[in-house]
Length: 290
Image (cartoon, rainbow, N blue to C red):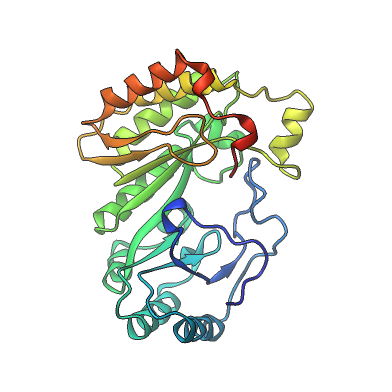
């Protein structure tokens, strides 16, 4: 396969064929992220993408899932995406699902009919980085979207019968804003009604603007126990009516949680509180990674 630079995918796409439809991220301004800093954003020629799919068909007997990378492949117009999706259906009739990253901005540019069309041609899940439910935090990290934008984008995806998988970042607001971040993220989970919610914990790398803020004392990181307290507050304020699969089993997390909201909420809160009472059981920082 032909890949440009580092390639990233959601944890649930670990066994998927990854096809780069775009290179980099169209926004690429979030202060906590370095994933695509070395790449100048561009949309790949559709012909190149189809060639990559041909190569994959020649090399793999069975492909169950395909993930369209990089950072926000949903930025493509539907007419381009449909060519790719239809070619996938032709080459890989066994493929059960095509996943894609989509920013709130990408989704809001598409109509309901556009999203339904994508589902009908094979898109089976859209991954959305919310990061926080707090407008203050979203502005501070230069997300480029508001709380209202993110809620509306998730609702549009779900209304089109496409499962939305939404990610939040524990510790993103530091010590000064953790309560606002937790409460607003919890209430956002309640309002947006996503099929899946994932929680990872902040890790910054050299080159990220936030990494400099931490080094120069403008942002103070939470301790592991404070991260768990923040997660507890988030879960306490997540009151969903529709079943939501909740996961905090990312490699960056100090404690692994998994369950369905609302039915497993009390169980996960109990597991969190037990972990807070046994700090020696938390994952060592040496073993946390993005």
